[in-house]
Image 1 (cartoon, rainbow, N blue to C red):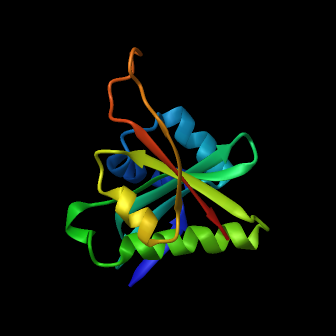
Image 2 (cartoon, rainbow, N blue to C red):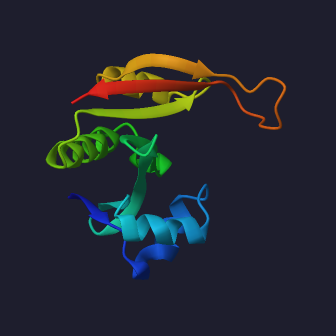
Length: 139
C-alpha cells in the first residue's frame, strides 16, 4: 500500500538516501516547514516529494523522485495528486513546477494538466544543465 507522510527528524537519513540534491541543513528547515514527504510502499521508503514557495507565494514542486523499480506504476501520479490535494486544502489556487528539457518528467507534468509557461536557459553561466522548463497548473 502506498503511503505519503511528512518526514520526521528520525527519518532524515532515509530521506537523504533518496534526495541527494538537498543539504542536511536545508532538509531540516523543510521538515520544520512540512515541505518534504516520504513516499512509502509497504512502509519502505521508495521515493520523496519536496516543495517550496516561488516568489514566497506560489507553491512550487521542486522534486518528485521514485526509485527506478517503482516508476511507471502510478506512484508518481499518486504523489502529485496528494500534493495538489494538500495545496487545495491550504486554499491554494495555482501551483508551479519545472524540469530540465532533457528529462522525461515534462511529459508527466503535461499529462497531469500542467501548462508550459516558459524556459530558462543557462548559456554563458556557470550552471551546466539543459534548459529548465516551467509549468503552472490552476487547481
